[in-house]
Picture 1: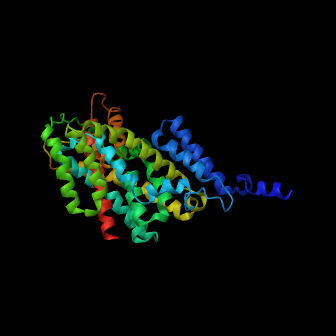
Picture 2 (picture 1 turned 120 degrees about the horizontal axis):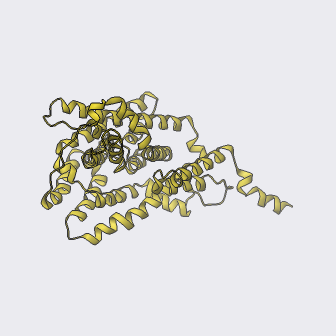
Length: 373
């Protein structure tokens, strides 16, 4: 009977707490949204399953958790907490991204820069709520709508908040189609929403090759801390645009990107134990993340309206919402919102310019915070 009681005592049923049950339910909800509602399935499926796995309770002395030295999960999680996976993911993103729209319209970079206002506004808000400088900086990056950047910065500055920050960042990335349209509608008039823009000019191969080289030099000189992210992003893009390393570009943009995404998303899910996530502090992070995302979207739209005061050829203010770095979801949301008011108004390529500049902008913002704190 003692042996039987000991066996029962080691089961997850005996160690289950209400928090574990809540988190397992949230993991199932994430998988439901991914499978049934098609919301960011490439992220929410591994994250949701990771949340379930990470909240299965187990007794002491069983080294299987991510914080148990030598466990398999801890070895995989090292790629997250050490900041290895985010730069590799950036390289894959660079290998898949076409910067032609930004090269053809450099002024669109201002919209990507304006959208970073959400990052710095949230940093101030987090300070007001009592978070430290390093914690506030890590929380603020959520406003860039860039999961890998949020994970990279929090792994360096606030590793104890990595779980809630990562979940908040990826959750809001998945909710781009829900959060952004109301803000876009509120801040634009019906007349502005139907503004048509000329097709982007054709960009030469030389420009596409020089772009990643110039960007990495300028960005690294402005914010050396951004080099791991911007450097890998532009390396991936150079592999794509050079025309002589197609095999490497295909590997970076497919197999390597997929592997890193699976491992990062799954281990981020595992890191969300109920004891860490179900705290008032975590709720504050989720609130600040949502506020950051709204401010970033609004700043991009309002800055586009400001630019129209000085431009002869007006731009559609909706593309300012794509200044957040959720590539290419934010640009797609702009396109789907615009066609509600004009079926023939094609803004996707125009929205991609601030969208990809937002990726660079959030990485530079993270580099600035890293250098300061």
